[in-house]
Image (tube, rainbow, N blue to C red):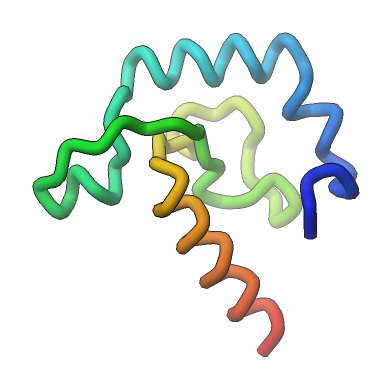
Length: 85
């Protein structure tokens, strides 16, 4: 589902989230998935490990990780495939 139709869309546009996201990316500038494969790729997005819609905490740092766009897309595709089963 596109974020534009997501009930959480306003959250991702909020100043509070933008501030947390920016601080997180400063502290964690590399994609954690790529880094685990010994690749140094800049993180471009902050991902909720447990999605908000599944009860994940919005601002809990332990529920956040930096990802590059390809890794985020792979995670999203995997979650979508799993939810369709």
